[in-house]
Image (cartoon, rainbow, N blue to C red; front, side, top):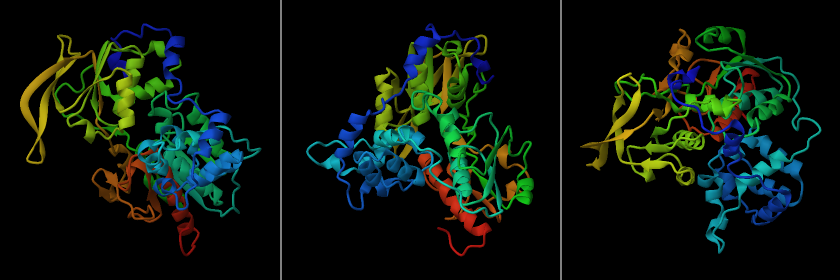
Length: 456
């Protein structure tokens, strides 16, 4: 069990039924009347800025007009044509810095954007298709291996299948979904939504999934390359970055993503170990998700610490507000200096050094302080799991830092091997961006292996 290093901690004081109430939808879904009113606020702009900024090219104004006209299936089809994971993206996408930030209604008398994310969710949640809304093209006879059943891999597989190809997905974990299943805050994707979305996606046909298949372990890239017409790598970033401090392996210190994964899979939340005092080190959405969830599980004091100021945090202001609303203490301008251990070698806190920007560079000031804690969760980013690209063929992949290098068609330097999502250099580490990578890579793969002249 991943949480073995926290086994000495007490369990939550609340019963599972009570705890579950803390992990319901962060933003309640719109009802029909609310959706009608909200869709009427849209100006249906020509060359709409909300559409231009959408990483997955959803025609926002068009689907909102369909909702206003009570054509829910039309709205859903328009969304899913561009983003087959439109349901999860409507829940987890940072709309506050994308489509809603671009909304022209921000600049009128109301000063409030159309609630695009909630309208997108309304369309997907209320669609009623008798069968899968997309049909497969004529069978091509081509077979593609997709490594990773996360958003990039699933999106790529669905589009390849829709174009008439057969796809086999190789997934290391027991369930498909990637971060949607294992890495998103439980209050953002509720009611087993990630699995429902996978089930819906597979209705296209032509896709099979093999679980327990680890690239670099029981699956080798050279074998996939020999067996399939093409290979798409949607590996994600499976390794947590290290703090580089002595005591980092001590009981009580672990990666936030590991705890979140256990939390999302737990049938009984009351059985999870919960520290009375917790420190979360980091500044992104994962750090916020971790801090808020451990607070909701019953921790008495949760402190999130970041080495720069609030304005430099990768977590949006919206996410920061969620943390503050949940009584998470947030300390900025401080970097970890030492893990503090008790006589038994377990975490008892952390020493931090205050920081400042000097001559344009972040520097320690020499002034330190300590925060007591029963557990420390690191959320300082993810990197490539090197075991996944450890076979001789995979080692020849060109890298951009710790990510795989691809061209503008998501081709790697190896013929017939493509990659997309968080494991490649272009774009942001967002679910919606991974979906777009998978979709675009599918078109490139389809055209390349079928000898077509140009990608769609």
